[in-house]
Image 1 (tube, rainbow, N blue to C red):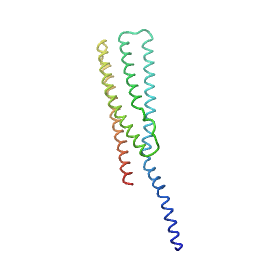
Image 2: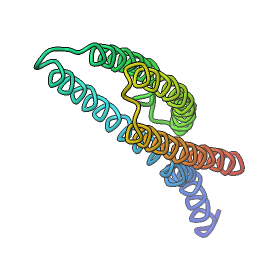
Image 3: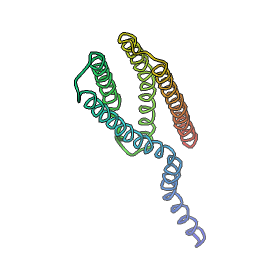
Image 4: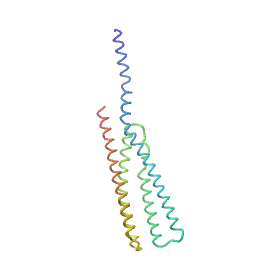
Length: 194
């Protein structure tokens, strides 16, 4: 064996030893978009939970303000409806988010699994939001009409609320579709690399 052959073998051994590490580094770099999606989901989960807590605190403050000088019949009906729908929404939010806060492991497959799970849950949230809004709108219109308080202003507020819910649903569905496409692209690239 000549010196050149020994150097060549040492180089080949070094290359072979470094190949899994290089592949691992390349995979980590390629999985960075998935890790960012998972981190953004977690930030959105925290923001949504904080927003929901804020809405509940606002509803409690509004309820206290309504109760400060007695309670008319229409106010009692409105408060009952408000808190019934708030309880339904809070229960759904708690149930729908179970198991989605953090990945079980740190691997790429776990990031992909968690992203898919969160996307499925977000789509479920869209369907729930639409159904809940329809039920709330029907209840509000019935209450307003029953207590002779249905005015053009209340109709405009309901229409504005419907537009806001529709915009949120549309934006969320588009984001979910982009995130699922990113997961599929990553998995396709990872399977080609193997």
